[in-house]
Length: 277
Length: 318
Image 1 (cartoon, rainbow over the protein chains, first blue to last red):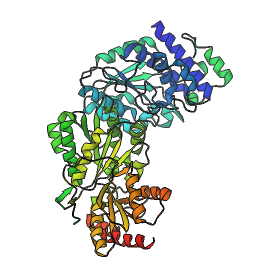
Image 2 (image 1 turned 90 degrees about the vertical axis):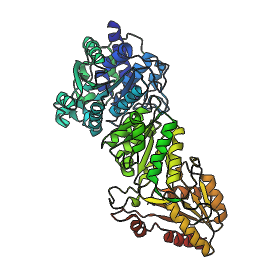
Image 3 (image 1 turned 120 degrees about the horizontal axis):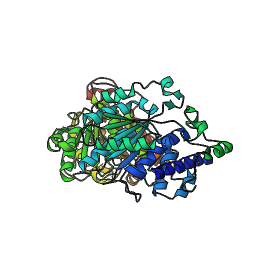
Image 4 (image 1 turned 90 degrees about the horizontal axis):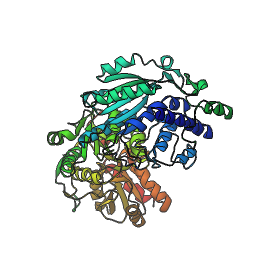
C-alpha cells in the first residue's frame, strides 16, 4: 500500500519532469490517473516486462486516451519495460516515446497506437475475444477519458461487448469531468453516465481513483465479476492534475507544460521515492 | 478470347472471396472473419456454418469492427473484416490509419461491391476512391484481383502474409478466366498477353475489358502487352518498366477515380524512370450513379472500346 503510493508519487514526478523538459504534453489527466495505473501494473496485472506483443497468458492493458502518455511511459519504465533514463527522450526527435503511444517505434509495453480518441475500447474487446479463443484465462484492462466517450465508436463497442458477453474485460473511465474546452458538463454533457453503461448491459462499479485503498478494493471486486457474462466498467472519479495543488480540478492543465518555477513548486509537493531519472 | 485465358464461366469475385476464406480457414485455425451485417453479401455462409466460433458479427458498426480486428491480432488471430468497399475504407479511414496501419496490425480488410459495378444502389455505395485512400497508408498492401479464381487465390494468400492488407473485389457476375487454383503471388504482376506497340496495365474487372480490347487492337495490327496489376501496392515496378521499355507507351484501366488509382502508381514509375505517353481509363473526378453495371461502365467510359481508343491515342503520341 505505502509502496504503491510511493511509486505513484515518483510517477507523478516523472510526468511533470517529462512534460516540462519538452514544454509539451498532457500533465492533467496523467496526474489524475497515476494511482490507478500504478495499482494495475504494480499490484493487479500479471504481466512480463520482457514484453511479447501477443501477451499470451498475461493480462493486457490498453490506453485509449493516448494523450496521457507521460503516465503510461513512466509506469512502463518503472515496471522494467525499458530503461527509466529513456523517459528523458519523451516527444523528442527519434524517440520511441512518441507524443502519443505507438507501436511503430517498437517501444516495449505498447500494443496499439492511440491518440485519435475513441478507438481503444474496440481494440481491447478484440484482444479479449482472442484471449477467449485461445483459452487464455488472463484478462484485458482498458482506460478511457470521460470526454472521449463523446466519440461514437465507444458506443458501438459498448453495445458489442454486452451483446457478445465479453466478460474478461474491465474498462475504466477517467471520470474527471474535464476536457480541453472546459468541463464535460459544459462542452457535451455525459450524464447520466452510469445509467448509460447500465442501459447498454454492462456491470458498473464506481471508485475514487485517487484513493489507493478504494482502488485496491474496487478493482479486486471487479476481478471477481469476470466470467459472469457481462463486461465490467469502473467509473473512476479522479481529480485532473491530482497531486499538484495549482493543477488540481481544472481543465487548464489538460495540455500545457509547467514553467521552471511551476515545476519546482510542483515537485516540492511530491516525494522523490524511487529516484528521478 | 486470348488463347491462354479461356473464359471458364461467369462468377462474382465476392463469391471467390467466400470460397477463399472458407478454404483458408480450414487450413489455418487462426483465421477469423468479422462482418458488419453483410455476411450474406460477402458470401460467408459456409464459413459461418462450419466455423461459428471464429465468426464475429459486429452489427452495423464498421469503426468498431476495424478496432476489434486490430485487437484480435494481439494473440495471433488473423482477422478478415468484411463489408462493402465504401464502408471498409472511407467510413473508417482513421480507424484503419491508427489502429491498423500505424500500429502494423495483421488485419485483412476485405471489401466487396467496389466501384461502379455495384450498380443500382448508386453513388453512396459506389466507392471510387478506396484504392487511393488505402495505397496512401504506409505499410498497407493493396490488392485488386480480376476474377473469381484470382480473388479466391488472393484471399487465401494474404493469410500467410504478415501485415495489413486491403483486398478489393466486386458484386456482379464477371467472366472468370484466370487458371483455377494458381497460387497468388502478392506484388507479382500477371502477364496476360504480350505484344510490342502499347502496354496496357489493368486491375479488377477492367482486366476483362482490356482483354477484349487487346483482341480488337491486334486485329488492327496494334500488338499489346496486357499486364494485370492485381497488386497496386507494392507495385511490380520491374514488370512495368520491362514492358514500357519495349512498347514506349501506356494505357491504364481501372474501375476507380483517375486521381489516386492504379494509373497514378504506374505514372509515377514511368515519370521517374522512363517517361512516355500515358492514357488513363478511369472515372474522371466524378461520383457514380444508379444504373445497371454494364450501362454504368459504358456511361463512364470504362469499356473495351474506350481502351481501344486510348491505346490508339497513346501509340499515336509516341
